[in-house]
Length: 148
Image (cartoon, rainbow, N blue to C red; front, side, top):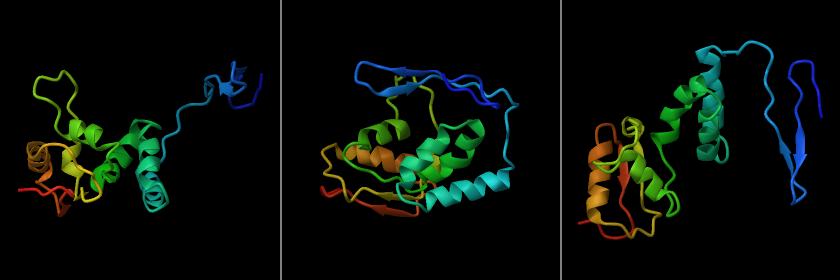
């Protein structure tokens, strides 16, 4: 067990594969909120770094304040691959009868580059996606498959 003056004890567990797993630590101090200006500087720094999409997603998971600050930059210019396109399209265009909370992330998309996709979906999905994000879309690169 590890102890610190600011945090409650953190328990380290070793599982069967000999990897360590850290138990949850509870901060004994009050929640700290950064001023919005400072948080925006941090988020812009993260956006311009390597693996920006992954890091912006990690920022969204920190707290509600960080989520609000990072969400617009996360969806501003999404990096689409064959692995994440289905998740992206379901986030932007959930099925009509789906019982999921609708995320209004489409309003943040400014640049949509689908040229790197080995695109196997229908033209109707691409058209639906474009209708959803067209409001503020500035640039669009069509998928490798012809879009007619």
